[in-house]
Image (cartoon, rainbow, N blue to C red; front, side):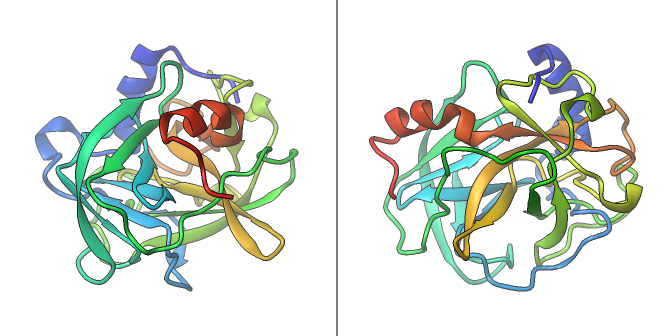
Length: 238
């Protein structure tokens, strides 16, 4: 929950998103995870990155991801299923690595609610994304089906350069599993009354390493900016 200086964040973003030269190719997936066990209705495939549906016509991803012309909503398969819809505009958060995408039309897939708090240290969470499944850049191709990993919130001190007020330090499970290239912008969720709630947006590595999953990762804390998101999208669903 402490933020890197923006310039540093953009540089380290290479850990979580493809380079500019490779932006046309999707990045890899969650290292040490497993293929998605359910078809999360809120999943959004953003070319080379990952995102989440937060309202019928709004999605969220990472600011450092290229704004796409269209996205696929409601499928864990980046090549099939769900609904492909155009993106009409993007709104960047002024402080952290979060970007809102307005969709040209509303979709019928259920969005993920943003709760009022992300949770205390130790809270069980899950990360999901179309990111690399091996830890070094370019070591493997992007899977078609999003991968997931059960993890947890850890102390801010575990993440170098984190902004405590607006970011979440997220554990790299067993010291070898975590977010990687292509997971940028993807969801960190937790169960609230049996429903997945969206608390985080994948941002960058928590130790400045170019090798994935060697330390906890930093996620934009959506509950901390919920009021801003609510204003930008004209009211969040309950």
